Structure formats: structure tokens, C-alpha cells
Image 1 (cartoon, helix red, strand yellow):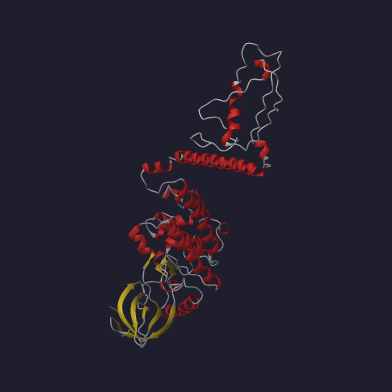
Image 2 (image 1 turned 30 degrees about the vertical axis):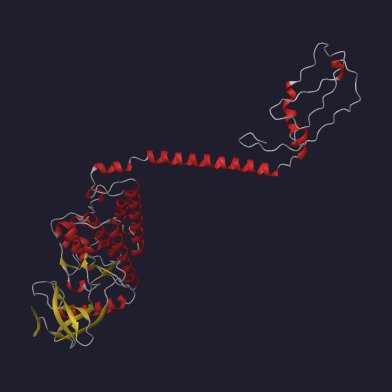
Length: 453
């Protein structure tokens, strides 16, 4: 429990006549955040209360000035949250008995600071989403001429939308500059000896208290958050704020590859540009920074998927990427079989087409020619002793001829036909028997496997 004036801050206390405090969510150097219940709407909300006044020994703003800034920044946050869902929504603001309060949506999740405290670092794909969404919030703020000036992991809240996807919201937008201040060495102090912000995430210009500070101080802080998310460490070494700010202003930035040797060079180049000593050489807008980081992350993801084993994996994992030849030979074999099959099918198609398109053969051309009639042998050539034996070459045509003779004229089965000897061969007088005429034959019948016509 803490006190502000005569008002006690405790569970059950009603603020603004309608916000009942339920439980304490967190406490800072000058304020507290409570979970509250809207008594008429029944809605859960978060109340930020400006509870602590600056101590007299601290050269800080007066309580009245801090309260005025608190109200002004509440109005800015309310206006910006209507433009983008990546800035926590502010719904109300007021003051009661000297206690200034700010009403915000209550979020379920955790800050990036809590994630890093538990996991040491954040996966590259997740960090890319965080950078992209925070850059969208910064882009809307910078268009309105508003600087955050205290961008750090504690002000980056990670929750989920209605579809379960990562949703990043920026907290304390601009309010922190009214309630947080850090005393720095005189060489880097402003006229009042104060620099608003958190030293670990300040740009060199912000650390020096430059009067020309612009939106690029937020881009430096966002790059620092990305660096810390990937490596688990800050880009500047320092055991305290004094040493850290001296190294920062001297440009002693530690390259990412020294922190994480396995990181792709594209990300190292990104941070070298983001932390360039010359302001003009850095990224000039939140959108440019986010796009460059996304490209570097995509290049790293492609290279990791194509060739690299996971970071921290044992050397044996590399062998998973080596046996590539066997699948290649199998592919070539499959291609060869496919080409051969297609070639055979093409040849078969050509043969079928050629046969279908060829002119039909006349039936007479395919029928066997009729047997040539036997002519009488001249007497001068015939031997006188015995008749000429029947030529054996005429047996096949004789068989074909018998198939066409009437049944009464066919020789008995099992006999071999012989040609009748001419009259001159037997010495008998020539007769006037007509010359045998060719016997018409029918087209040859298809022979089945048994040899029967």
C-alpha cells in the first residue's frame, strides 16, 4: 500500500467514483498499475496512478509539472491508440484528491522484458514480428510529431489477437518522459542536468541532451531492442550508466557477430547501419528500418532452410543436408524410364496410324494363284521306258485344288494325287481330250492351331 496525500491506495478503493481497485499489477519509481473493475459496465481495466512525488534532494520536475505532463501524454496516447491497435488503448483520465490516474485496456500476456528474463533471447522470426509491429506504432506517433523517448523491452507488450496471432502493443507512450529521469555525467547533461529515458536504449544525441533530438532517437532504441532480443545482450558494454553512456557516445558498439557468431552477415550489416555514428547514414523512418530488418531476417531464414543446420545443433546435424546424390540418381532414372515409355507409345501410335491409313489390298491379290494346268510333255523329251513321275512341287497346289472340287470328284482320303501320263508317253494314240482348265479356288481360309482348313 502507498499513500498520496490523504488517499489510501489499496484493494477495494474506488477511484473516480467507478473504478474499483482489484489487485496491484506493478509499481514504478513514481507510479503504480492496478487491475480495476468498472462498477457499472463490469469491465476489467488497468489503472495507472501517479502516486509518488519527487523527493526534495532529486533535481526533478515538480509534482505539478509531472501531473501536467501526465495528463498531456494521456491525451496523446488516447489519440494515437485510435489510429493503430499497436498502442495500448487509453479510455479515460482524471484526478481525485491530488491523485492523477490513467485508465487503459487490460492486456493478457507479458512484456518483452519478461520474455528476455526467462528465455535469454527471442527467435528471429518472432523478433521480426515485434520490430514490424512496434515500427507501425512509431510511424503513427511520428506522423503526429510525438516522440516516445523511452522505448525499451519493458514498454513492449506481447499478447495475442482474436485469431491467436502475436499482437505487440507499445506501452507508456511518451508518459515515461514525465516520470522517469536519469542523472548522467556532466559531459552529457542538459542545462538542467537531466536526460529523460533509459541509458541502455538511448541514442548518442539523446544521451548528450541534444536540443535537435528528433524521431530517430526512437529508431535507435528499436534497433537496440532488436539487438538485445537476438543476442540477449546490449550493443554497448558498461557496468553502470556512466560507463555505458561514455562507450555509447564514443561509438564503441559491439558487432552482432561478436555476440552471436552464427548470425547471418545480413543482420550484422543491418545493425551497423542502424548504429552508424552519422545520423544521416542511419534509417530515416520506422518503416524503412522495419523493412530492412524483415529483408535481413528473410535472407537468414532462406539460408538456414537451404543449407544451414539449426543454431546450436550438434555437428552431426549437418549430415542431414549431405546425401543429395541418391535422390538425384533416382530422379534421373525415373525420367529415363518415363522418356523411354513415351517413346514406345509414340512408335506404337505411329504404327497403328500407318496401318489404318494404308490403302486396302484387293482380295484377288491376297488369294493364292490357281494351280497351273499340266501340259503334255513333248514326245521327243519324254523317256520311253516309264512315265514321268509326278512333280513333288505340285503337291501343295493339288491339295488346294482338291478343297474346291465337288465331293464326288475328290480322291479317296489318304491317297496322293498323281498326274495322268500323257498319251505320247505310253505309246497310245493321242486323244482329243480337252485341255484341263484351271479350277477356280476360293480365298485361302484361316488355318487354326489344329491345321484344319
